[in-house]
Length: 145
Length: 145
Image 1 (cartoon, rainbow over the protein chains, first blue to last red):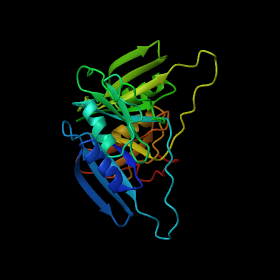
Image 2 (image 1 turned 90 degrees about the horizontal axis):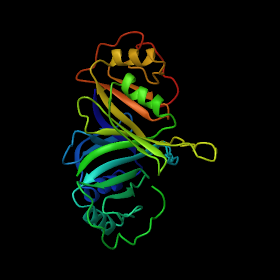
Image 3 (image 1 turned 60 degrees about the horizontal axis):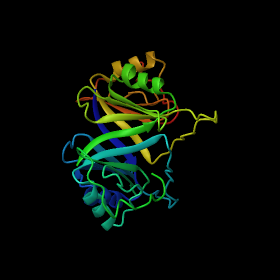
Image 4 (image 1 turned 45 degrees about the vertical axis):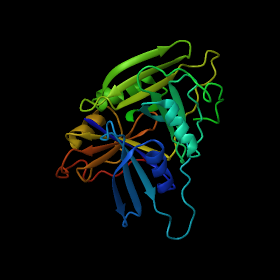
């Protein structure tokens, strides 16, 4: 028994791909198009343990022009968590890409952001918490995660 | 950057714990109670790569007796996938525990089940697909996953 991946459905493959690669520093490992099934799968791994993958499923737009499915968002699935070397630097970088830091790392230890399709991502500082610092220390939460 | 875990919220810690351990063969790695926050976290790992964990969050029942939160279920999160040594044996074992095989392994390669809180679990046969066999070969899908 081996853990393989977490699959999330996305409406914009490139937007979530950028979030995971440019934003979080994951690496795209493989990609598969199924013209018959009208979907594309793209896999990403974190550099430290790329075998535990994130699988994106992109269902191609309906051929009849009907609207894309609304995937919604619920609370039974919580989040995907990653360990980062410097949570302050990671959050500053994500913010520079226009990504909202829903739960800023006020404690130098934990932050939450969300993918374009509202999957919560937990970022945890590797090892001991960093000394809390601005602008995070006095930053309020934004929305939910 | 390292992948740590996928967190799911559960209404019955023991029921999901049994699903993951007795059902799927994961191992409980650690457990943490927070009386102050009124929640319990329990972590599970697959024997082949226990560092990629499943984190269960159990929020204790409200002290005022109000009903537990309905966590719902949505399609933006897809599933968690595990590789198994013998998908027929795994599905037979899960079925013997009363777990519905939502998508039977008709192809000897892939099956889907759901946790008590409706998180989809994909099971994938390690290596080449097994020769398809009954009762799976002629078993219809049940519900969604």
